[in-house]
Length: 186
Image (tube, rainbow, N blue to C red):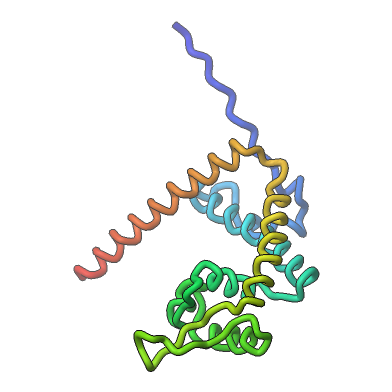
């Protein structure tokens, strides 16, 4: 019985398709680099391309930065509010950054600081009713933009990518746990 080798899928030559000015992070990869490095650079490039477009549209249509949008999004997901340190962790930024961002949003009436009933030394940041309405309006448009940016990538491919990236996240967490355990034994 003879087996016929399946043809390998043709790799996209993104440099030819996108051009020197648009290739971004992937330009760092050389043909001899390991596949893991190429995948990582492609993930960075995709993220940067999407993020750049979203930032531009947020600024143009709503006069808001991505950082402010992200802050409002976290507070929207936590109707009882968040302590500053929790908000800082969710946003993956320093406490100083969150303080400055919060100060601006308080001045605009989009968020409030309230005493934390469980710890009188702390306070919680919460969306105001106007802040909630503003976020809902921006979030609906933001969702449309992301869907638009993924247009042309069929649903099955998006689902497969979502699942594969989930597997990657789990493996990264396992690898990190193993590395942390090994460091702890040194």
